[in-house]
Length: 65
Image (cartoon, rainbow, N blue to C red; front, side):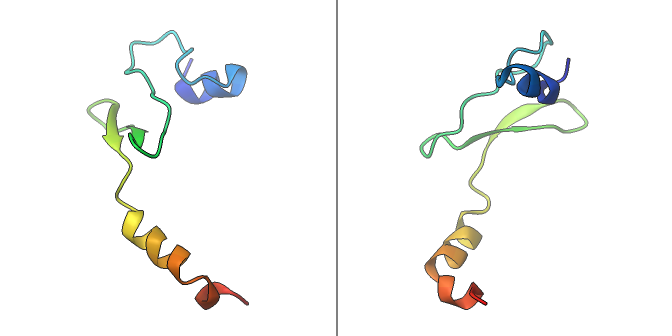
């Protein structure tokens, strides 16, 4: 069972029965993110969008219609 199907079935992506890295909970401090790639899955830090999100969040009037 894939991690996606495990999440849909149990709301826990780690209940898949496969030899995959543990998918950690995302927290503001850890910012851990599960990444699939050709050589296999791994855990990376989800901080690559912070500057773009800060720009959007700091300028909400720019995006109002």
